[in-house]
Length: 262
Length: 262
Image (cartoon, rainbow over all chains, first blue to last red; front, side):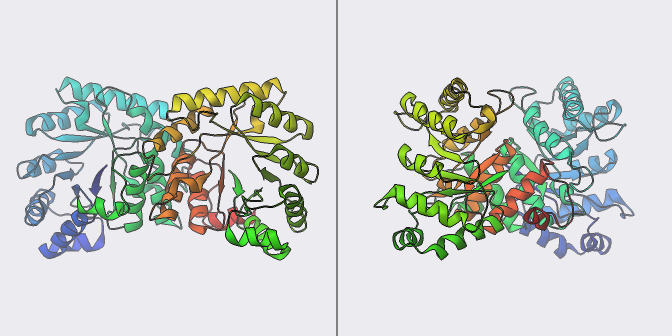
């Protein structure tokens, strides 16, 4: 499982403030803590209030790379902000994200090819988030096909079926879970799959319980990556155990500790 | 989800002692507590040390039915012990269990027809527990076919793929999970599926974590029943949440409480 730590995002109040005031210790602690807790990639998002997202992206990357050496997922709707970041990354990056729109894919896959990155592909287009697994599969297939035109391998894609909050789109839960299973069958070698996990529990009363239950179910359906809060220990325990059930790590009595020591 | 409470089993020390000494309050508390916690069926097993399993089975059934009105799963390897119980049950019972052996099926399905019961069918035969999902499916199909010969509907079967301990048969975890999915496709209307959950964590260090993770993954694969400890609150919370994700209950902020009030 590729765990993408979600916490370095300017939409969180403390992080937004740290970016505005260039408080590098706040960012570096978040980076180190997430990696210690099991994140293998860190998401980097300047947030909605950034006055100068290009400069903020550059500062975040340099600040993070001062303490940890992991791939970064550059998270922005603006291609020029992502490109500024791509010039600075020390490890092979992930672009977060493209959707299935032709124009968007052309720009993002162009950048991915130029800078040799991986790409998160959202199964949505201009008309929004699909409400069926069939439409999700159609959009995911369009993303894979376009990536291939650009010479990008399916294994370098992270297809995201778009998780919706359980309390407003309950029927979408099983559509998303089945989509994860179906996306893996699009080609061989299979594309990666990912989800923005915390969205599922948005507005619900027992957020950690909903998050870890959904993640466990997604792992059962073959999920290979998730964007989540790695500091939620019970969430990580559930994920580690679900992967153990699928034989992705060898059982030992101290399997939780063993995973974290990797 | 049909939760079959596993606690009234003479293999547990306190229960074995209560059966031997005819301590009805111990049994009645276990019965009432399990039903309060969400069990819709209670398993009844006199245990390996019973001197007179027929009498013990009768005493257990009468004792349980003195406090709760739920279906019972009569759990014995001896058909005559089960039949003694079937004469006494107040609600439609489940026979726990047959396997795929011809002779065993003939006896158990004969009883099931005579007493109008449901049946748990274990996907194993004289050669033991299969080590592949293909073999499990073959045995499950044989059970469904034999049940149909006896005029028993697939919906009245609970097919059990046989869960093995993660620490000794780790590769079987995903075989069992996929079997749950495949058993449901054997016919339409689909047979029920069940698992003896606690077996998965036998001998492991974090038993409750392993149990609730495996159950959540099994629900994601379409499991419709499980034999488990309903007094494990975190386990039940995980199950309730997993079913909510699959839209089997309507979301409300107090969804955990709502389930338990049913």
